[in-house]
Amino acid sequence: MNIPGQGRGSTQRIAHRFEREAREAFDDGWSSPTDTDPDEEAPNRTEWRWEDVRSALSYNDSPDIGFDRSLNPYRGCEHGCAYCYARPSHAYLGLSPGLDFENRLVAKRGLADRLRHELGRTGYQPAPVALGSVTDAYQPLERQLGITRELLTVLWETRHPVVIITKGSGVLRDLDLLAQLAQEGLAAVYVTVTTLDPVLCRRLEPRAAAPARRLQMIEALTQAGVPVGVSVAPQIPFLNDDMEQVLTAAAKVGAKRAFYTVLRLPWEVAPLMRNWLQTHYPERAERVMARVQDLHGGRDYDPRMGNRMWGQGIWADLLRQRFQKACRELGLAGREHVPLACDRFRPPTAAGPQLALW
Image: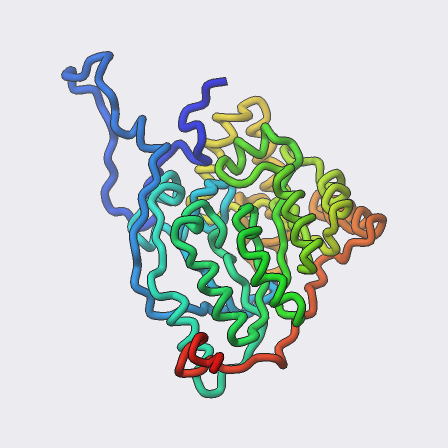
């Protein structure tokens, strides 16, 4: 099937919520059948630029999230997951949460140095940091820039606990650092496996690792001694309905923990997801959105704490029961975080990691 924008999660450069002007294409009579619209070619090109950072760690006090600080090396994500709740963050850059989120990326220059500075502040109290909470720290650009590895090096130097959530196979490049961190109780990795269906996965998460590859990631991390969990998020009604099969496959290759969330559609993600459904699954688009609204109290998205992650009502209850039953049968710890050590932390030295060896 020939799908417009194939290879991307979004086919639209949807206007973001801060835009004051809107443009609409029209035929002025000068075009010819052989003319090429530059936007037709754009979906398969990725551009990136540097951003000089002023801070490394971001803090939150949300009761829905199991960490109070996070670290993100990039803005935007080339994995292009159609459902990504982080897409609206691109609006703050004056860019579209649609296609721009996937192919106009920002890399944070000097982030490792900034992190080292913040960890060295007087009075800093360590707690597990989530690496890649907004965009995947192991998206394709990481192979070229290596910012994530620089951050892990600082975290190892300071013996700081870290949790990674990823669907990028690049995590295996850093097995050496992750194994050292894990040996001291300082690291855990959650691999997102949204579905085992390769066709659905390619449409839903077009530039992320294939499902079979993600299971290999879980197995390799486990064999290296890294505690591994599986994320079966997000649960999208009538699409990725193979949650039990995913959990079974993940447990078989070494996953010990699991968690899920329901589909969240904040801000521009709602119209983008509607467009994606009409493009790929038009016969069930209305049915999917109707059930999503059931989960969110009759709206596309309910942002209230306690409801936004897991939904409400009978369908949310059924999802929770299915998840809990599968976890019990498979021996998976559901929504229980890996206990990580915070008492090994040592502030970075002024000399840096190399001179500190002497």
